[in-house]
Figure 1 (cartoon, one colour):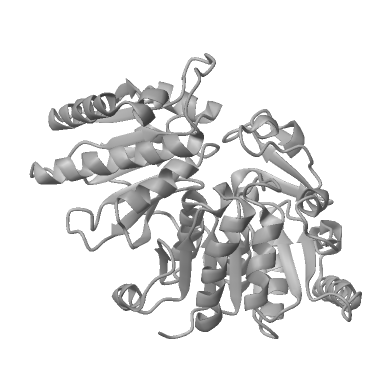
Figure 2 (figure 1 turned 30 degrees about the vertical axis):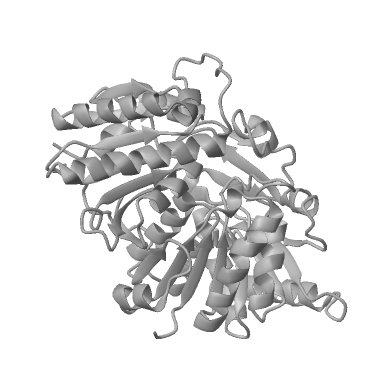
Length: 455
C-alpha cells in the first residue's frame, strides 16, 4: 500500500465519520476501518489518500484506552502518514477515569517522531470556538453559544460533565503536563487593518518564530511539546493547517482535536472545503432509526420525526428481559414489513426524568444487538434494509461491531457534522447498507426527516 497523506483514529464512531466526510468531500480517497485493518481489508479498500480507524476510547477507562490505542499506534507507525490525527469530540468532554484525552495522547505519541503535539481547540463549522484557550459551544444547531462549563448540556453530561473551559487546565487535570498555547491574535491576519502581502508575510514570520520559541523551551528535558491552538473563525483554518503540515514535513506529527484538524489541512492544501454534498435520495424501502442518545437535542429530533412509526423502548427491560427484547424485535420488523419507517428510542422525549436503568454501556450493547437482529431478519425475509440511522455515540460504536462491518466510505452529508456512510462487509446482506451515525449534540430538529431523503 502506498503511503497516505493522512491517518486518523476516532475515539468514537460518530465523530470518526465526520472526519471521513471532510476528507472525502475534499477529493481524498478515504476509508474508515472498524478497527485496525488486516491485509485483506486494506487490499479490498484499494489505493487510499486517507486511512481512518474508528474506536471507542471515549467511553473507555485509561487501561483499556492504552490497549486499544497502542495497536492503532503500531499500525500507523508502519503505514507512516505524515499526520496522525487523534480525533476527539469537538466539545472535548472527557475525564481522568473515562475517555482520558491525555492518556490517548501519551499512548499514541511514541509512534510518531515529532515532539510537537498541536491540539486544535475549535470547530467553527459546528459552532465550537476556542479563544485564549477557552472553549465555547453552541447549544444545538444555530443555538446560543455558551462557555463549555456553562453549556446547558455539557456542564451536566451524564458521564463526562465539563467543569472547566480552559482546555489547558482541563487536559492538565487528566495528566497532560507542560501545555503551551498559540492564541489567535498572533495568527489571525484579519487583526491587521491593512492586510497586504507584506503584512501577511510579517504575520507568518511572527507566528513561526513564536512556535519555534515554544519548541525550544524545555527541548532538552521534555519528550513531548503539546500546544493548544485557538480557532474562532473559518478564515483561520488555512493558517493552522500550514503550521501542522509544515511541521509534519520535518517529522511525522500527532495532531489532536475534532474534524477541524482535517479541515485545517484541507484548507492549507487548497482543496475545496464546501463541495456540495450529493442530494440524499429516498431508498426503495423503509428506514430504520434508533435513538440511543439521551440528549435534549436528540429528544427534540425524535419528537419532530412525524414520518416514522415511533416506538418507546424500556431500556431496563431491553437489557434484562429476553421476552421483551424479542417482542420489540417483532414489533420493529412488523412495522418495517408494512412499509413504515420505524424509529425506536430509549430516552424520554417529554422532559420527564428517567427511570432507573441499566448502565449506559449495557443499554448501548443491547440496542446494537437488537439492531443487528432486525437487519438480519429483514435480509432473511428477502427485503433487506437499505438505510439505517443511529443517534448516540456508544450505540453507534456497538452497532457497527454487531453488524460485522469492516469499513465505511463516504456517501453524503445529511447535515453539518452528520454523515451518511456506505457500509463495507463480507456479509452480502450488509454490504452497501447506508448508515447514518450521529452524536447527541449533532443535527437540527428535522434530522430524522432529512434521513428519509427528498421526495
